[in-house]
Image (cartoon, rainbow, N blue to C red):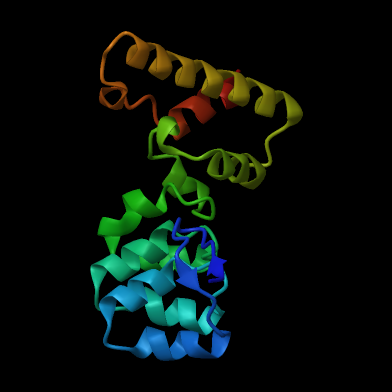
Length: 167
C-alpha cells in the first residue's frame, strides 16, 4: 500500500488522485474530511472548502497542517478565534500569532520561518538560536530532575524576540 505523509502528521493515507479531494471535502464522512485536512497535497479550492467545514476537528486538522498557506490560516483565525493557539504553532502562521505562544511550543520549522518573516540578521539568528537552545536545555534538566517539563511553558516567543531586537 502506498502512503502519503501529510504535514499534519498523518501517514496512513492511501494515495488518492487529486480529483477525489474535492468530493471528499464535500462528503458526509467527517473522519475522511479530517484525514483529508492533514494532507500536504491539497489544492487551494480544497483547502478553502475545508477551512469552512462545519466540524471543528476538520478545521483543527487543517490549522495544524504545515502546507496550508498563511492567508488561509489568517481566515481560519478570524472566523474561529478558538483556533488561534493551534494556528500559532504552524510554520506558516503570521509572526504576530507566533509571538503570543511559548517559544517552547514552536517547532524548529516554525521558528526558522519566524526569523525569515522578521528578516532577522545573522547576529540576531545566532542570539535567538542560543537562547532557544538554553530554554530547551532548561526544560530537559527539569525532566531529568523528575519534574514535569510541561509545567514550564517558557517565555513567549515575542518576549524572547523583543529582548534580542533591543540588544
